[in-house]
Length: 64
Image 1: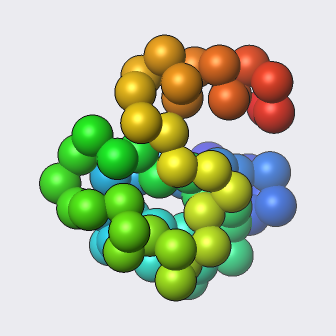
Image 2: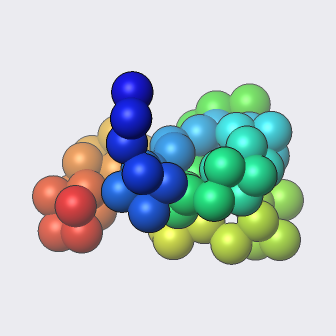
């Protein structure tokens, strides 16, 4: 899409998603209500881990 990595945010529910963000050089946010346990996300340094759709919405509203 021609968007620079520093202007891209990956939102994912697996360590694979967050690793993809690391590999792409972009920031990430994890969501705990998906496939993988959120404790595994810490090593991949997401900006935030949201525990509900509402929390994700609020975080994006405040930080995007």
